[in-house]
Image (tube, rainbow, N blue to C red; front, side, top):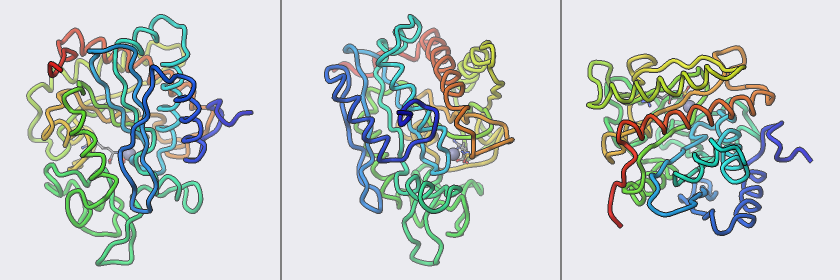
Length: 315
Ligand code: 0X9
Ligand code: ZN
């Protein structure tokens, strides 16, 4: 019926109904989890996909920015591939990693983009000092929060860091969820759009680079090369977030890397490079998702070669 054929973008209700169908269809491989509740009281849901024990863990955070619809469309497409594909590469990828996928983190903002303002980015919690609403959830984590002009202190700005770290209930909840599984997580991928970039820490400074920066760039190159090798593949650039984009402090990947020891953490900025930007036509969903799939497969292969996919803790 086209509701879930990745030929259009879906609402939160449609995504959650589809998730329920998937969980019911694959009860032994999938597990539902709840990250927490949003400011407006919505449930932030996720799905774990695990074919066997002692797999390295990969956490995918998607749609932290409300208007970046390609991210949840890609995340749901990946879930479907992991469960249904018969392709050998996809089967290896699916079955040899444990997947924790949060398709829509900023649920209130996402609903707002569907119902009121397509270009909304932030959360929907009102400010106490201004009539402007919401904070940038990707500036709200407690790691170098507000440092080096990596976020704004103006509640009306698109990159407002919030009144304090973890002021946004969605980000507080996500941080608790990450902490609860961090011993099982080898790799964190934060899905964003747009610009076709792979960004490593640090976000708060371009003067310094993380200890394993060279490894992270090698891993990012593997992603870019794999995507480019596709017949219709696009070009991905890579570097540290502050180095090739702009300073952004308090982002998910920086907090996970700096404070929680997740040694491989990337922001992936999907299609396109600006022609359509956030309003990416739905005909891009499947090609973008195929690029993500092939890119993530190459990325994890390189991570494994470099020794990053070992068990983090004996159970
Ligand atoms: O500004 C952001 O939060 C991300 N770009 S977006 O256009 N999707 O809003 C980039 C974040 C990268 N920076 C860090 N991870 N620090
Ligand atoms: Zn974003």
